[in-house]
Image (tube, rainbow, N blue to C red; front, side, top):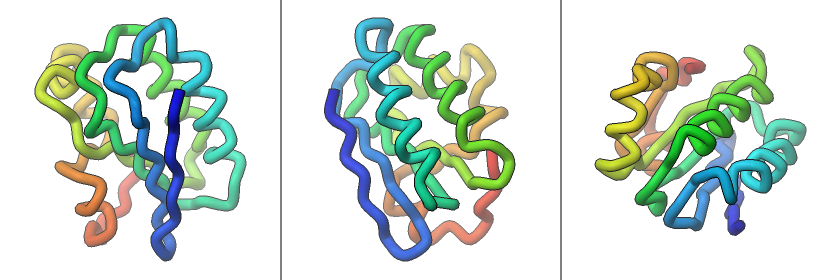
Length: 115
């Protein structure tokens, strides 16, 4: 599993460089994101723009990451592909998470509301 983490000023962008986030990857994904959650990053954006498929295990992993971040950190999601966006809408998780069109939008988004 490849997770690229970059810090741009106050914003940390974690890009999942995989085409799937499913049961086979969810545990390793959570472990990688735990390191980000435990770091000093206070404003974290998860870039899912390369993920073409997500199942319930993948969605559960993203929810677990949000819980890891706690209330003191800002956690947003960016770059949902149409198939992944559909999963978020069908499960109504689009109302739980702050979702941005792209990771670049996070660098210009001043609302910083936690999902």
